[in-house]
Amino acid sequence: MQYEIIRDAIEQLLFDEAHRRYNVVGYQNNSAGLVERFEPTVIVFFKSGNFPESGGTASGANRFDLTFSLDLSVVVNAEGDLMTLQNQNATADQLSSSLESFSNSLRDADRAIDHLFSDVYNVIMDARHEHFKLPKGQVSSRWLSGFTKHAPIDRGESTVLTGSAALSCTVCEQVDGERGKAGIDFDLTLDIADDDVERTGVAGTLGG
Amino acid sequence: MAEADLAETLEGEWALPVVLIDPEGNRYDTSANDPLAPLTGQVLYGKRAFNPDTGEDIFINTPVVTLRISSLTRVPVDGERWGVKIPTRPSMTAPMVDFLFTVRPSEGGASIGVVRLYLQRAAQA
Image 1 (cartoon, rainbow over the protein chains, first blue to last red):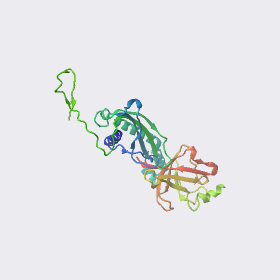
Image 2 (tube, chains in turn green, brown):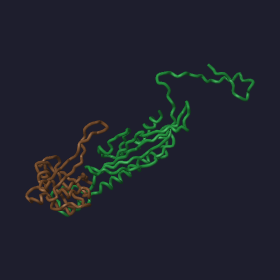
Image 3 (tube, one colour):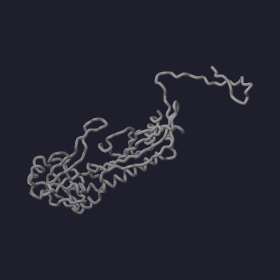
Image 4 (cartoon, helix red, strand yellow):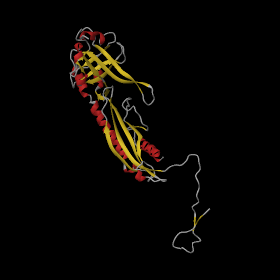
């Protein structure tokens, strides 16, 4: 089905445009909050789809509204003057300054995931990527409809922050038919050479 | 359980050395109950879980230190950021590694005489 092509195209687009800013995982993954990832990560997978009855036909093409999930995650450590903190000979003033120098990892994680979403939004919604680098007409109405951050996990060695964005688009699905059976061939060549009576219309016989 | 029992449950056979550094830069590596004894407590390095993708057993680093409040020369209070050194592995002689913790109200255990510290790894900027 078309949506599988779209799924692969979105994953490839995010991968091609990452430029080492984030990693891309192309399947649903339950461990976003469990396993620490040390680089910003985008997990993209097909989440749900809807065939609106008004956009369907009995035996032809059917409109398929797709929703993909983009799960973003960042892992952050507090950064500061660690060398002084590790120095056994550091004075109290130096240690105090060192402790003050460390950033707030919750704030850093919040900023990091905002930045990651900004990167992903700019890739997906770039006008040049309207069709996810597929031929024009294969997919339409791509839209990143929202972004939600989840609660940060800071009861661990590192602070983990995750969020989800929903990407929707529309494709036209055709029923492939029965696998392994050749279809019936029709020759629809029109022969209008004999139409010497009804010259204003098209009449003829099916060839072949 | 009496507070004195913490000398056995937290500072007994399984205890590990801990060094605290308060926001003013003062180091605390001895017990307030016995200045000749090192400051020790319960150090848990992480927890086991399974990776739902692979089914494998994995270990998640979630270092937590539990200390007896009466052994502390200065008790961390809400909102303060402290430094802490714990052994790299469960051994009295292992090299120490630096972490940070910021005290939050939920980490207090004053009613049972302990304070629980959730450590975060510090990185060089």
